[in-house]
Image 1 (cartoon, rainbow, N blue to C red):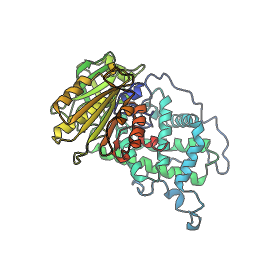
Image 2: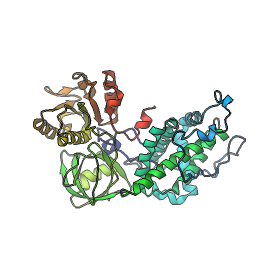
Image 3: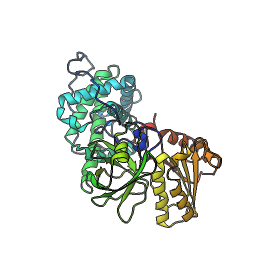
Image 4: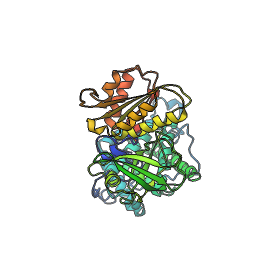
Amino acid sequence: MEVPTTPSAAGYGSDAAAGGQDGGWFGRGPSGTQGTRSPGNPETDRTPATPGHPAERPTAPTPPRTAAPASAPASAPASASTPASASASTPSATDLLRRTMAEIEPIADKVTSYFYALLFLRHPGLRDLFPAAMDTQRDRLFKALLTAATHADDPVTLTTYLTHLGRGHRKYGTLPEHYPAVGEALIGALSRHAPETWGPRTEAAWVGAYTTISQIMIDAATEDELRAPAWWQAEVVAHVMRTKDIAIVTVRPDGPYPFLAGQYTALETPWWPRVWRHYSFASAPRSDGLLSFHVKAVPAGWVSNALVHRARPGDVVRLGPPAGSMTVDHTSDSGLLCLGGGTGIAPIKALVEDVAQHGRRRSVDVFYGARRNQGLYDIDTMLRLQQSHPWLSVRPVVDDGPVGLLSGGIPEAVREFGPWHTYDAYLSGPPGMIRRSVDTLVGIGVPTHRIRHDSIEELVGATT
């Protein structure tokens, strides 16, 4: 699906960390990648079909008009004909999916390269939906498959994940008729490269799983079309450099743009059409309708460099729909523990403003981290908020800090304070910081259901 990153934050490293990459199959590749690999010709590089190994041109698993029952997204195709007496020894559809994934994992790059070659050879018109550089696109597909396989027996998680993908794919121009072609290429690639586990029941399990996956995404996009545009035009009205590589970019959408503090959006610039990156809103909703983003330019970052070094007032960008669940529950009086690393402080600032706007006094503790003191580019803003709100505490943290600042990184600093087990924790920053912070919070007694962070691949990361 994505490289490991948190779309709600720009961190210390890659463009993915700086703004996130948009999820899904129909999305642009990584910043700075050049050209495409040549995966070979799948129509000439083939092996003869053998018993139990279907031919390379399977029937496209066309999505039905109605969604499959949510209670059994992948098990029905294989289990419907399984006698009850054999159920104990016969692998379930989910088991078959996972066995296929285990077989192809060592050759994931080869499998996904073959998938795209097959897709574009048979359906060349779909090539325009994809980026010119496909390296990360292959990883994204493999992780999406892994998510489907590992969550096939968890309809709630799977539906939530796929609904988000289906809505987000609207901005690429994805249509319902595109899904059968993708399914055909998927089955073709798996049947070729998983000979040990492939067979009629395995194929039925994958056809059933993909049918459910595609139908959930199609239904989500159809429903979303009734209430929101696929994207918004937004004019840049302010561009302020905070450091040599960090800018605060403020835009005015061309129509109402409802969102919640803590959420993020996908953003496309006019200089790199169809290349989208995720950025968090740096403020709570404003009465003037303006939206602000903190953007860090990183080496070879297409979108981040364009926004930091090229964008000026008057330029027009495009915004996807808001997304993300790192929002405040205003029915609760629990304290908030907010950990923001790098430009991950942007959504944390928005959460603080959101609490202030709701007027309820609840403790909010912010740990603002950076590698060096210069990286705390927005510390003055956070300290001003602290002066205005007695319920807010802001602690700057640097990896190698001078005297007077907490040092050693955010996870280590959090251990020195607390206890935090009654707080709701919000994390935004580089993937490494997120992982270490989650481990730290769990280790000191914070329940996992109180820990919130948005990650493009959080479903996959939870199982690997």
